[in-house]
Image (cartoon, rainbow, N blue to C red; front, side, top):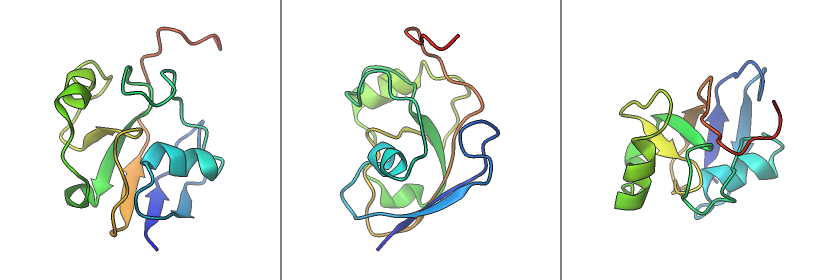
Length: 112
């Protein structure tokens, strides 16, 4: 069973985490199922960038990003070559190491 290793994030996951998940589950769903409260303002429909993550290890095991995902990633804060929308990145058979960016762009957030 593949693991998702979440690097420490000051607010969302201060201690980091190691999560076991089934192949075929999105990274976002795996995080939420394991009490890692990543934002997902568009309800995982690939219509925002709030679930943006960096896939530091295991990126090559994921299917390539769709054109729609690439278009939204272009709008993400802190975009880098390892960036993916966690709602679109589906776990395969390899472990992943992810980092949640320090900031996110959420135009509808009510938690100001």
